[in-house]
Image (cartoon, rainbow, N blue to C red):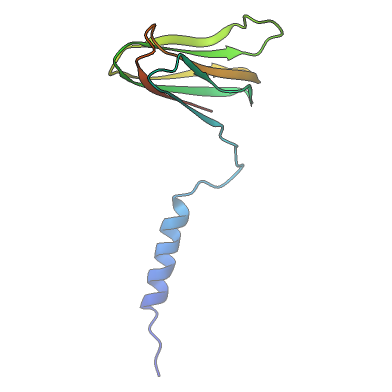
Length: 126
């Protein structure tokens, strides 16, 4: 009985391709927080998230019909904490912002328009 090495080679080639898709080395934790703002809801926000220094990606999709405001607050000991980044997203628009930040605690918030009629999704990741 003679064995064929074609299946073994095919398996080895497939394994090499699959393993090349995954980065190796020091694994870095990725923090992702998603918020959904529905019509009739004035605001949604996360808790305080501890982030290591790096780049923060803020992605907002506003389904409308009005504008939505987003904030990334920097933790502080008083009620009016400063923002790392904030802005407004008009109806039907998508916004993606990358911002460098120091290590610390951050809160993510989405505010609806004055009639609380808009729907939006916000994703914040490091």
